[in-house]
View 1: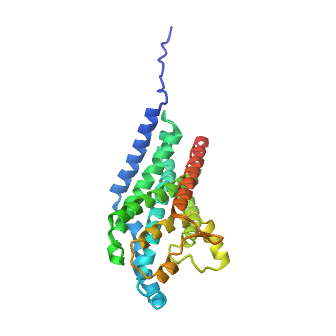
View 2 (view 1 turned 60 degrees about the vertical axis):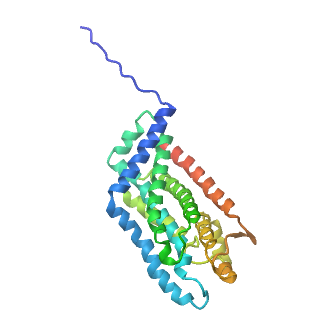
View 3 (view 1 turned 135 degrees about the horizontal axis):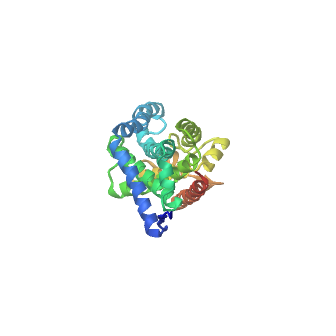
Length: 284
């Protein structure tokens, strides 16, 4: 007795499918962010504590050395960076959660390129991190930073670039992770030293040689410094205070331009995106 065989047609991959996949993954990340109020608030606690508690405490110690400016104003760009970076890493870590619950496998068998999934994840994580950073931007007036429209736009662009790079880094780490505990342990081991060595909480000038080298080779330094340069360009502070708190990044005595710093961050982000895509093509 003959048996009819029903053919199964698998849709061909196309650029249109890949673009739609990017949009779907990005939209899913935004919905997760909007619907998770607890996560939104918890991610703000640490930077706010650093800014208003530690910043006030450090300010009392440095009051005589840097007259004419609130130390919280100096820390403000670093706290924006901290908020964006931590949020971006947590967004990237949701890949591990998706793997544990089987959702990642469903995405990987869809007729779209894995690169599209990674790009959507990185864009979604970056936008979520920027959304979190906007809340810190709203606190600018409380620490003496003017609500200058051009400054706000500049900081938003720099936040997005830093967030995209960090999300790509997090996706690269999460691509082979099997559980959340391993990912968060590795994240803390990688991100916390980089944050402390980025100049987010102390000026980059007059450092010991060994510490200067560590801050110079730290990629996050080139994400924090442009934000500080943008903020200090809108402040009215004495020249010697600006030179002390905002010396910029130097290579062998040559001050690195902001455009080159941002270019380095973008280049690192593109390289990490490529590594993340390669990791996903070998996974599952």
